[in-house]
Length: 183
Image (cartoon, rainbow, N blue to C red; front, side):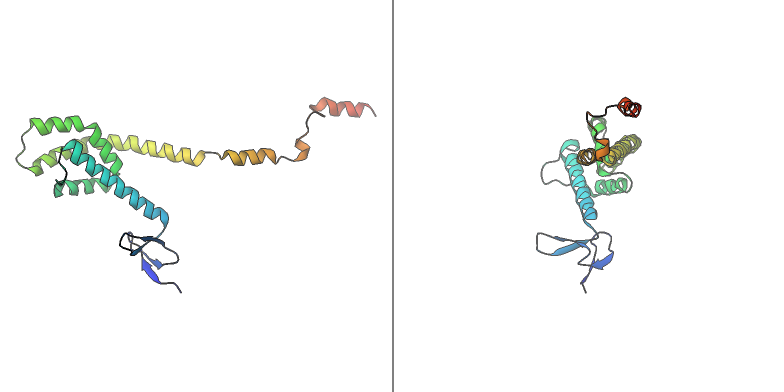
């Protein structure tokens, strides 16, 4: 009987022989329901890291070591409940000039006011980016599902029955009809 374990993400109970095992840098084993769940987790983590790096360097022009305000991280987390990090980043990229303009020309009393103003700009535009992104994702999924494996098609063409592989001997029905007339 295998040892029991718990998924690191969804907290489902299982056994070590069924769950996907990952060993971290400290040598501890962590278990996930399956490899896809783990890969999605890693992918989301990377998207979030890229978004935060983009915001700190390109939008706020922070130096290395400066941190984003906690309220900013909280608002990104709220947006991420529905929108993917990729959509949030694309929205920031497309509205960067507008955000930069207001950061320079408007005087804010505190950081919270500045962040609230920035997120109002985002919230007014993010649904448009989400529609485009979701259509693109649907298109990619359809392309992946509809691709035909050429090797399978080649095997199918090579495995035709010999009765269908009549080469030059009988090219059309007239040869068949001419045979009956000879009797």
